[in-house]
Length: 312
Image (cartoon, rainbow, N blue to C red; front, side):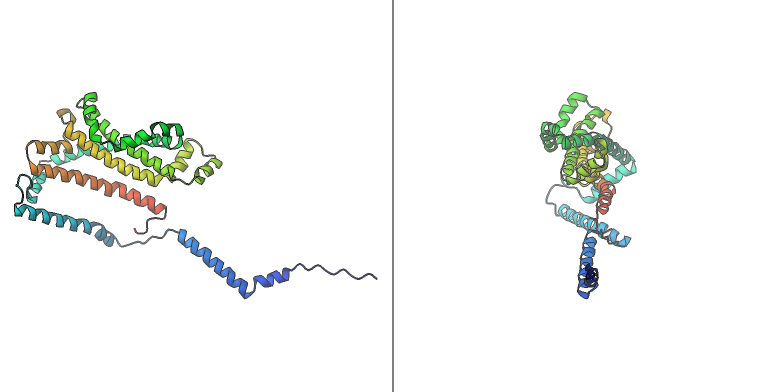
């Protein structure tokens, strides 16, 4: 009789023994720990502090700096190093500011300038956003006006005021033109820089998923370029605020209302140094307030969404 065939050895029992051996178990545990560590690195970690600690850490340093500045100012004034009409006492500046508060004119002054700044900045966003997308994605457009945008960004906005007065006269159109000329290049260049820093794989994935044209810009380019776009918006706001002050100082007239720039110019015309310094401080306070109340919360939210905000 022929011999019975020998069954093939599959090695399954050996593989199972190898997988369940102590050495294999240790290797698998080390691999799992390594993967968990990498996942922990990618996981956003936030540290929540009590509200009073946040208030102290945010508000105390500026208050201390302000007190030190006022004490140094008072010391310089008391030493009589310079004439008092050039450097008034802090209390005189406070009286000039309190006078505008008492008669209610400070609110109309602030509203005139802040409303112009917000309207001009909103129009600049509407114009600069599609312009930045075109410059970033269309090579011909970038080659044609890309250097021009960079040059306009470095051009002092005050240079536009005389030309705008000749073009539009002493009207609100002059003010808004100067604001737009100062803010549009910064916003557009910020968006271009943000899009240039997007990893190339993201637009490719969007094309595979069917995102093209406006859909790709809305769902891929703008969200991915948001940090750079936000930085451009912050710079654009700063430029628009400076442009507005320059326009209000130079192009002053009865048809243009009475804003912060006109308030500053009036103090200069009447050699009223306390009013001049009070106007400067009001301009500074508005700029700091917009930064703290508008841009900083938006920036923190964007960073937190990307796992970059470690403290809240």
